[in-house]
Length: 150
Image (cartoon, rainbow, N blue to C red; front, side):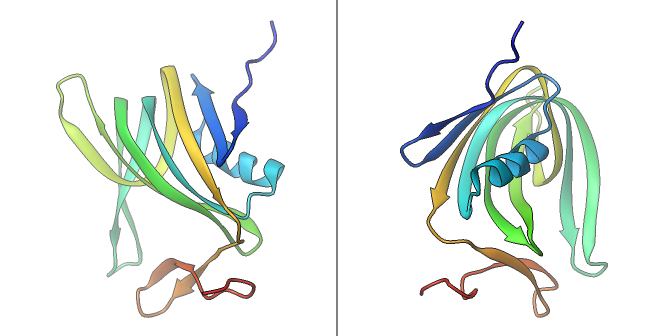
């Protein structure tokens, strides 16, 4: 049996339909490399077997992370850019469990569970970079990068 396609082109970018076991961030990074995506905005939803979400602690400059099992992600939003020549996904998600308790935060890892996970990627025409902003103390999407018109 042939492995099902994971994405198709659309007029504004791509539509991904990920399957059980797929890693969301790795799939988005692969799409960026395969399609030479300059930058993009994304949104999505679906079932995950595991989700590792974080809340950024500016004092220590890192995420406080928690892992959750069996969530229905009701909203995934983010941007795709580049950092030091590699794909950089910045995404946040919220999702509910069987008891309708909802959690959310910065996406550190999402692994698709039984069912599927759909992501719409709207591609932008300019390559955007992420860099450490010393004032913020975190990587920030740069709109003034070389080759980016204001």
